[in-house]
Image (cartoon, rainbow, N blue to C red):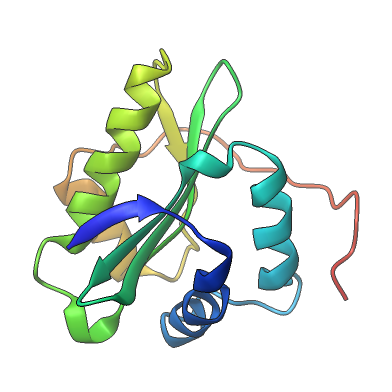
Length: 139
């Protein structure tokens, strides 16, 4: 798998992948999420490709205090090949290069497969309560 920065021509394949992986929810417009990311640290929006096809993504960010990973996705037909770990290794390497001391990420509470994946690659549960407040609606 080749890992590279997102290109505008990747938008439709990325949206298909996110839908295929169940990452699209009614309260987040994925097209708007892409447009927002392209305005901030676009070099940290990663795609993984096999034979020219987008099969993985990771939307990475760093705010000077913590790194974040969102939209980690691997096509169901490409799972169990190490691609998720490769994407996270690429995200971690880029964040480390920026001086990031810690990565945070959120997993939906019902996504046991993702929880297990992150635990297997060394992530630990933080004793925190996650809060959010919409500043802009996507409906």
